Image 1 (cartoon, rainbow, N blue to C red):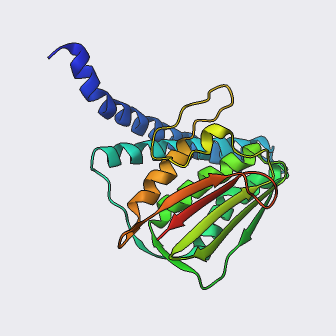
Image 2 (cartoon, rainbow, N blue to C red; image 1 turned 30 degrees about the horizontal axis):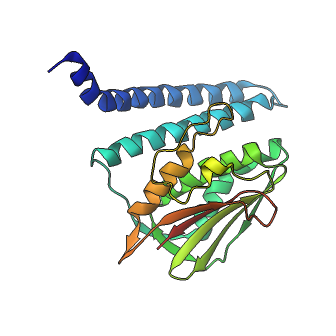
Length: 228
């Protein structure tokens, strides 16, 4: 076997190992930033919140890459449990609201208190946080995060008042790796990850899926995650 063939076979594992190392370094960096913020006198510079936003975003991306590698190599299993939809929304809001307020972006939520779903709560929360991050980058001033039943699904929806999704991110099939638009910063990783995770959620003959369109009630992008 040639060196090229060996590299081709081993590269995914090498990449996953490197991502894991980077994630560990990022965890140490986040802890250091927290120490520096605590040592800083009031009023604390708003740059700390921006650093927190960016490090959280990087951490979510790295976690998604590791999860996708484990799925590809059959090393991943969902942790399905019953979760209150309100609790999932509150988790997202707790992670995002302070940073959104610094950008003067209003995060609204809509959900009935008695709505429950069976899912991997940690993965769903991570996916929603990433997509809210993306919405923050492209919206003008408002994001709505809602949950509601639809037929035999529980639907998590993110709507904003931005310009909407570009055509490349409005495909009906997000199961394929997206075409990366480096010029505009659109990688589509968050959508691909969420579609992959959604497909792993099944109930009978139904599986989860996502829909992207520009039919937001605010005139911008709308993302919908369907869980059976």
